[in-house]
Length: 500
RNA sequence: GCACCGGUGGCGAAGUGGCUAACGCGCUGGUCUGCAAAACCAGUAUUCGCGGGUUCAAUUCCCGCCCGGUGCUCCA
Image 1 (cartoon, rainbow, N blue to C red):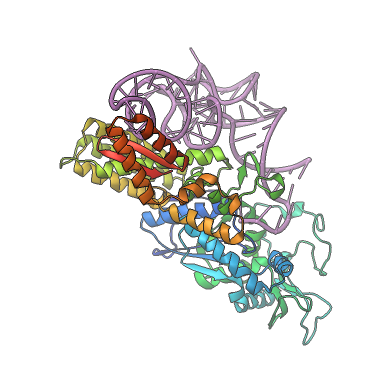
Image 2: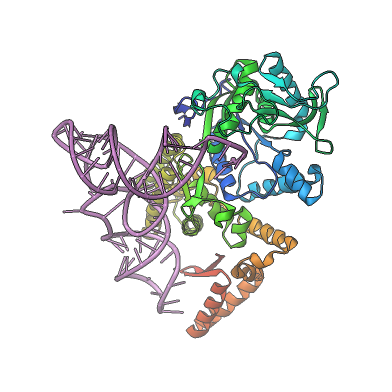
């Protein structure tokens, strides 16, 4: 009954447990808010969401910290290009990021920590590293009252460097592909902790000089502030393993001499159409791009979580369509089951089917979050129950049991309960504000323009036509609605419709 | 170049040293329907990149090759 998760540090699948026996303390690297998030970003955040949702489902308490990097080179560059200070530039993208999390039903971490709110903690950490002989300052302005000068981490002071990514430092020659002595580093591989700034650049005046933090510093400082010097789990995209996480370890452990995190989880990158996603390849998609193309947030979520986190996911529009259909099947099923008229009682067959599905579902997720395997028993159950509904061999107690299993599925997958209207509407509103409404799918716009009342009116007209056996007119109406993304189902107990 | 991951039906994707190789999507036929849709049933991989080896037995282990991807540099 415990999640076992691959641990990059140990190289094996280890149980995930809170070291204090009460609350799991985890840190997951968040975004740099300089642009809108793309599906690659969200695959990682989504898989971390699957992790935390499953831990919750298994009854674990979590304290999850995520950083928001709101100062770095790209932000400074983009803000300068836009002609605004970074403090005016980043809030826009920070809000966009949080809105996108909501769209994808990614639960908010307990603590969101912004880099610029934690400069004192970072400065303090540099001071501790300096005392430990792991950090040094360079630059011509060195000396009393010096404001310039950058701080670097002295790799030579941390022999364990490379233990996470299993890199052999011996094999990496100094200066091989590193900027050569840009700031007079002792060793070319030493990394920046604190960057000296030129006059006019964004900077903070601190005890260690005037400048701005290096990227790796914030995560060490904030993780330790909120989670302690040693915590349970640290997660992020595979690219962060080296150098980012390796550097976090070096910064923290060189002063604490304790493992920063016991367990390290890394989410694999995705491909798009079989290639690495990049703007130059033309296969680069933000969440908003996809919503405007008419894909539902739930379908995007399912497509991005259905391949286990340690496997490369090949993202395609076929895959998105598949996810759309799969969700439709699940929602149609739940709807049907809830509305079915059943007699009271339970049947052994249904109870057993539900029990089996639940057992296999939990087993698959406990085994390194195998989301692909976890889906299978749920669909098996859906088929079995649909069959029973057809045959009339299911009772009210069975329904309760089956719905309870589906709830546990949705507690992690979060795709059955329909929250799709709002993200789509928000994306359209945003597109309008940006003046890019022409990028939206025509069907989407048509559907938005059709109110429930209008649909009901057309369906009433169609019902009348059908009663008069005027099938030509009734089919016309059905086609008309279909063109606007409305699907009609003539069931025994009446007509149902839904927005596609 | 060095290192790592993967190649399973039309597509996506699990899985295991030996029962009929999950599940989803798609497609074909049937039931139901005015026709559809939904749902159910049946069919859809004599076979798991190629070659060799280990084994009573390999898709699953080992070796080689081919192909795809990734890391070694900012990147989720």
